[in-house]
Image (cartoon, rainbow, N blue to C red; front, side):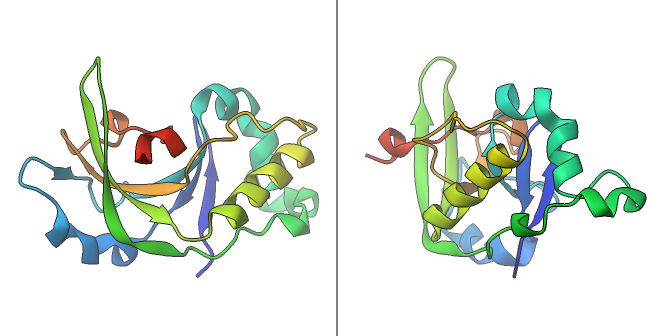
Length: 156
């Protein structure tokens, strides 16, 4: 299945509940799972996405059906392909913990984000160490309490 992309404060791919529900039994007791409509893959952090949200929405054809002609056809997202295990990620000060499932097709998502950046005229990849993932739980059950910028070092 191809993911649905949303451009706003962050650039994200929506993850349907049925793609992650099989992982809920693997969560420890202290983990609070996110609400059914909160599962997503952050493609670009808000400090990069928010200032360009209208540009992203424009090239993705999200603004208005009358602007469909502005949609760039090569920007169809990759298939949503999640890995098979839950990873625990923790950060200090303030204390944050998240339980995530990695995208199995990391390179496809990285190429996709780079194409989006190129389409809006930005050639620099701002987060080259980002690990694309779906957060399924954190300590509060609130998507804003997750660790959205998981990188390679967090998984070591």
